[in-house]
Image (cartoon, rainbow, N blue to C red; front, top):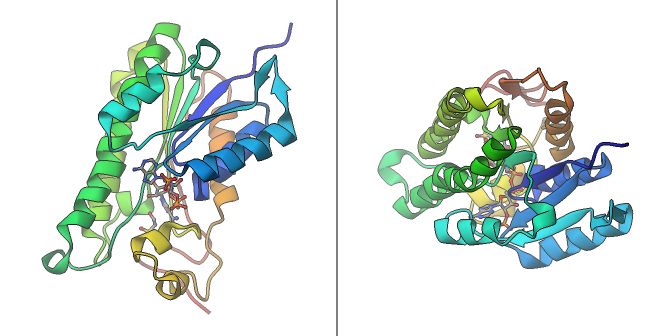
Amino acid sequence: MSTPARIALVTGATSGFGEATARRLAAEGWRVILTGRRRDRLDALQRELEGLHGKLEGHSAVYPLRFDVRDRADVERAIASLPEAWRAIDLLVNNAGLAAGMDPVQQGDPEDWERMLDTNVKGLLWVTRAVVPGMIERGRGHIINIGSTAGKEVYPRGNVYCASKHAVDALTKGLRIDLLPHGIKVTQIAPGLAETEFSLVRFHGDADKAKQVYQGLEPLHPEDIAELVHYAASLPAHVCINDLVVTCVAQANSYLVERT
Ligand code: NDP
Ligand code: 8X3
């Protein structure tokens, strides 16, 4: 008898790393819960992936679940609303996140700071808190947190974003310790510069400024991170990647890049 398809929940599946990860996992035979705030994008991705992969064991290959990770009640309601056939989540990819602004602290916008901390730190906690008890009950599971090189080293004017990703680094370690008795894997993938909608969001929709971030180098692509998520999630049951820092070749650390 073949093993049933595993279920992944990917936060921030409407763009960038999350979207590429959802596509990759679905292509590898996972059933994927697609999450994010933008309903139109969730619907479009659902149509695309259902068209490509059809049904698995009588269930759709994907299940769209719209919620805002910053809203604890919304997160709890959404996870609790999952139909029985979608409740046994094997893999949680905590990917939803953003940077907002890039100013010295003394000029920073406190609203940007709140968005980053509410999304990158508290949002990750709300989703994890809602999903992990089920993993413990079932005695299996894997959490992959998308951190950043910004969570390893602080760079100029990165202050609050870097702090939020340092928190992801610490929470990943803390979770691994707390979940040790339950056999749940906890992994962090910490990418460097990657071209997604990240910089467009960081610079509040300024496309020229966003483009400059990637000028003169080949940054990581969303598919590179999807490949690593798939790799980490496909290892034998006794193997857990704890931490994986990945940059493009043109980037040495959080602030040193070589441009042509
Ligand atoms: P994108 O902007 O392309 O994607 C971000 C995703 O997060 C979107 O799907 C967005 O969905 C979702 N999201 C943002 N806020 C919320 C919210 N409040 N509730 C639910 N979903 C939310 O960026 P990336 O793919 O680059 O970013 C993904 C992760 O990778 C982030 O955590 C980021 O910090 C991290 N990262 C990015 C790097 C880069 O250079 N690009 C490098 C290292 C790490 P929606 O708007 O529909 O809600
Ligand atoms: C995103 C990478 O260098 O813009 O986490 O902070 S960076």
